[in-house]
Length: 336
Ligand code: ISE
Image (cartoon, rainbow, N blue to C red; front, side, top):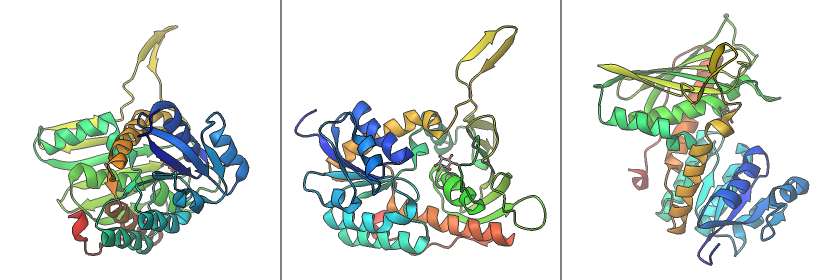
């Protein structure tokens, strides 16, 4: 720890917030945890246990305005993000905000406009797949057109079981939001339309039933996503790119292979924390470096807004069974 360490406050001490607080304390260099804010005092206390120099707060805004906080991580529920983001932008401190940036495009655009008015990118959205070594290699291959032009992406996003209260909307806003972002990032093109297919004729109210999402993109690449949050066997996120002269697959669970008791096999990760642990670590370490220089290094507020616009269209597509176009506002100069 040094005097130049970035002094970080974490807002939200739920599953992700406490995971990030531990990450900052245990695994990052150039940063130290100074505060955790959560309206639930017990959760906040738990997240700073074992970090004597960090305090627990019950008012998340107090973390943003504290003079000993240089940068904040926002990991509270999405509906709480907008006032926190606006306060951080007003104070001029860097933020790493877990997705979603905000729950809808209108509020996301207000954050974008507030940031753009200040002329400096301060808000990074926690789309961690952009830091996953396999996804990074896939992007490199696609950017260099190693197998020719990209034609299609086939994606599968499977969670072992839906947490209590997980609704069908959340298949889009909480889960497929990652594919919206990775698709834009991998292809370097905006998304233009979205359709959702599901079993039967009426929109399903059971989030445990798989759905198929089709995404159209500016460059003409078609993307399909199977979203299945009740697959039972483990956590799996795959993306296969079909190019003119070959295919490339990431997320194929190609870790250690075992041979034992007359069988061979390998492991499947249990949830997104172990699957993307390396990505989260890299994302945070790079953010710390960027934040110390006063900026960001990852998905911007504009990317968060684009994802929110795709989610809104996706939920409408899911409810109506129609193909819904994704229309974006004019992009401020800051994100050109
Ligand atoms: C969760 O919120 C995440 O962000 C995970 O990455 C995703 O796989 C999961 O489906 C979401 O519920």
